[in-house]
Image 1 (cartoon, helix red, strand yellow):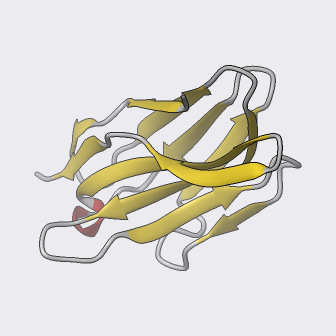
Image 2 (image 1 turned 135 degrees about the vertical axis):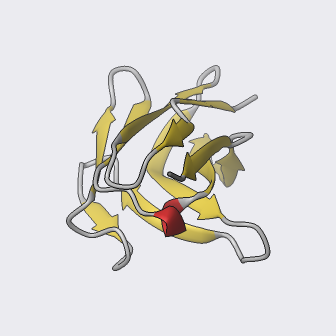
Length: 119
C-alpha cells in the first residue's frame, strides 16, 4: 500500500515563506514523478509543481520564480519551498506520486496540508 504524508502547512503573512514536505512509502514500490497540487475554496485542483525521478522540474506560471521543488530519491521525499507568498496562494496543498509495483502503476494522493496566506 502506498502512503503519502505531507507536512509544513500553516498561516503566514503575505511575502512570507513556508516549506512543505511529502514522504512517500510503500513496500516494494517504485516511485516515478511526484508533484504538488493545490485546491482553493470553490476552485478546481491545479498542479503547482512537478519533479521527475531524474530531477527535472516543472512549475505553473503562477508560482515560477517563487516556488522551488526538490526531491531526495533516497528518502522518497519531496519538498516545496514557497517564497514571496501571496494571498492567492491560500489553498490545501496535496502531494501526488506515480508509483508502480511490477507492471501495474497508478497515481496516489496525500491527505493535504492547509496553507493560509493572510495579514
